[in-house]
Image 1 (cartoon, rainbow, N blue to C red):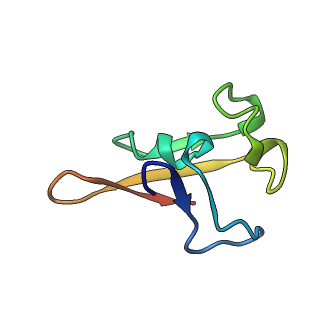
Image 2: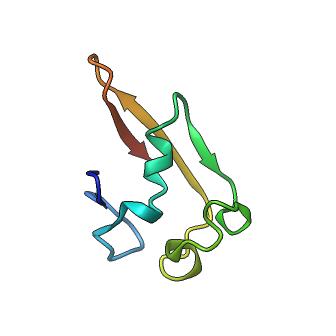
Length: 79
């Protein structure tokens, strides 16, 4: 993830290899100190109109947690 984009290094069920950070679920996950869970993206006001929810790959559930480096930088891990 950088200022503008996120990249998918591994993926199942989609051919998308990157997206804009503007509608990234990951951008929310890396700001948390614990697990970030979205049980139903279609019902969450932050994501209900997100193109990753309204069109392919039609994300419904999301879970992510930051990996914090020893010097305090947040990385992200996703499920």
